[in-house]
Length: 210
Image 1: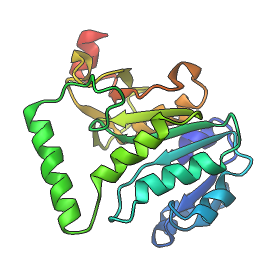
Image 2 (image 1 turned 180 degrees about the vertical axis):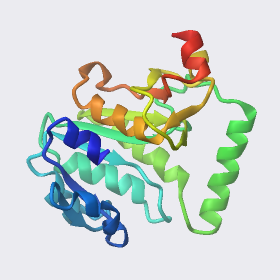
Image 3 (image 1 turned 60 degrees about the vertical axis):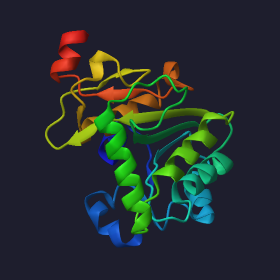
Image 4 (image 1 turned 120 degrees about the vertical axis):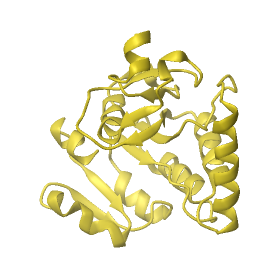
């Protein structure tokens, strides 16, 4: 995501957990890095002040309202009119019109239970985070990603308003292209107040149904 933003000529400020800052070493001369937790309101305030756009990954770490705390801090401190792009998975629904397979629903239920039992992740808090976003008056977009895979970029993913659309059937997106879609959304006003579910543009379902 950082590389895509730099390629667009953006000035980049990044918030990164202290233990992961080393992963950004190749960018350290080109971006400002603020070590810290993304649900730390003072950290977020420092990072987003004056920014025209904010890209946020809603990670559901732990059971301390991490995702909702992150989302609320971004919305509270971003300047009025800033484009706010959030990311999550397909399990998030904006209007209840998404159609999920029995296997997908079972996987989400099991993963959510196990995550809370072991106090590792809280999927429900990610749902709460997006509820806060959907009801806000900010210029938000929530990008809902399919299963991710590694590999070279295939280009900008295709999207649908609802999971269950045949175009999403392949359920695969290159990780680098998920990031590409988020960066591209900064300048796509058609995505304001949308929750696009995305899939790789070269996947069989995308090719068949485009």
